[in-house]
Length: 328
Image: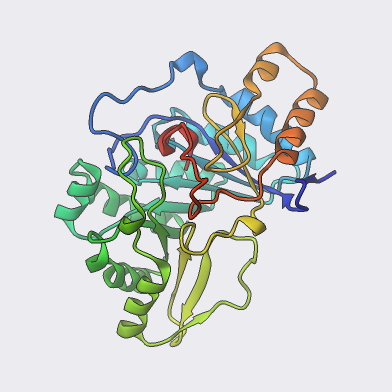
């Protein structure tokens, strides 16, 4: 059985948020103070997450990514990694983190079966890091990257591209990735903040960043082996050393190729990051409902999926939840 929406898109990629809490306060995601998190009792247990993932795997899900908030804040996370890695049919398991706590957790996560990490890092400049995150954790992030590489992880770095802010970081991040064997992914600033700060004019667009990299490193070549359903448009450097990707959700939406669904930390299924509706599944998980009931709710959510988010349309409505609450 496959999860197919009304537009024929097959869904095999599941993003699971394990917490809405975070230990930094990026201005484009969270306010500095007064953040309201879900009560602990509303957050899914590891057993509930495992059961949902088992049912989803039975419907054709093959990839799982753990997100937050900051997932490394979730106690005993390697226990969940082991549970998910053991599910038949799950071929790829990854995690997105800000890396503040990664130095101490890299080895336990690797030993539990995790192999891929995406690390959120917008800049290599300490002052700008503090400006963006409102925290002074740059050294901890660097230590986390070093620990992850030493443990054997395959790494990508996600950098949110805000215009008039990170232009000085585009080339240094690419060079950093080339030197360390890390793919850099530049993500166009999206309307997912909790403070209404997003404006189209604040988006540093893919074509502009690609021009900066081309000027510095020469022409970049599209990766011929790239997955056409992946959110990033990927390039490799002409000299064969390293690659970069762009998640151009604003300037080049990829909705027609989308293969993802999401489970929030408090048990809601979402068919799109920008969805204005969501489907509760926690009630079924906590009522002891049979797998068939959970599967039916997942399938129905996917069937209702819209054609796309229409960010560049006057019809676009920002989701009622901010990014940290949805799951990255």
